[in-house]
Image (tube, rainbow, N blue to C red; front, top):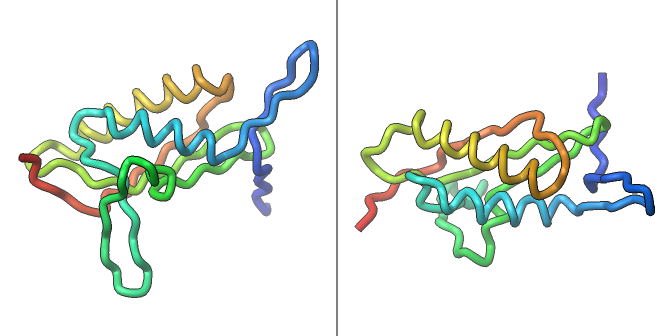
Length: 125
């Protein structure tokens, strides 16, 4: 079965429809993620040479991919850099729980899945 993705999330109200662009969801999710314990930041991976770059705060959504399915449910892929010496499992659980709660509250939509790709590790000063 082929997956169909609508590009915007939607909410139906008594007055009409509200459409939410996936970039809005990605930017919000990124700002929530970088506040989470153990997350140094979002990562951009250069496919040509395999280099991983820590993204500046203004470009957080470049390390995040958001899809909205036919059931109006969100899937978020995070490409992150984590702090050295902290349990990746603990960081991931915290990230998933926090992002799920805050993004669902922000958008009024359900999160179907959150995937985390740990692209690097950094020592925090």
